[in-house]
Image (cartoon, rainbow, N blue to C red):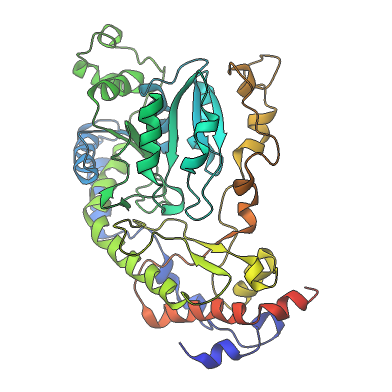
Length: 432
């Protein structure tokens, strides 16, 4: 990486771009990788008119379970339904509470409302941006039933203390792996720690197969509950007395079958996913290694040597430290990096505890917000109650998500960040 590039005038002030040919780098970011093998697998389903059968889906499930290191897997048309079924199968019922990080996509929490339950939102760790184990216990109440652990933006959550708390309070653990396919926590695959896990595999995810979800578990009771809730064509597998009498009609009044065109693509994508994420990890770690010494930015990745990894590194983030850059607002930093031809964005979610769906919406005509109507205690989280999450939008920014290891190009993108960091004082002094 040329030092002269970072010394040049910032592009936002008319200087040369650090990434002059970004319009030619589409191949570096295009995802998923779709080959003739993917297309043929989908065509075989279409030409066989078997889109609504389950043979390809069950093959995909078996392969996914082996990959994840779990006994059972069930596919769904989307990750949201997989999460809802995971909640119900783990025992979440009317009046119960789900403890969930407020910094996550809405599907980690909102399905609880459809089950008659409420959500007790908790804060996040400022380094991992995942559920803070130290903030769980204050949110536990008499009707707490489960903890939703989200491996957010690819970073594995700190599972050891979370599992210890769950065991001590007899709470189920549900893992949302939608951001972290293939990520490891201390050498073990995320999604294999909790009682049950669920994931989305929609087109933008790191394991992307169109639109799909997957539930995995080692628990046969949870597996059979998941079947009876939304997989009516598999009710011949039911043996447990608690669910067997209901065979024939899904208890969730939901058809959870995955379209087999997606399952077919899923089998091909999963086949090559392990080797593809190795290249993604190599590229992303190289980007961060180039920036390891710059102030104002911290890599959102596990510590080297920890045995933990970022999997496919979905929606990669930087932890932004404005006080090291003279208090420069993250918006100005992002604008300057983008002006250099590089990639930067506001890439995290809005804290759910402040969203009107959880503070105002009367979904079922209870005469009060549904979130509170379904709780047996006050589960509101007023402004200031979850401070790390509430300030996270000023301390995180989306960075380039490289799908291939192209060091000479990655160096340009890193140079754009270094250039802006080294001239942050000029940005702070500007009126723009």
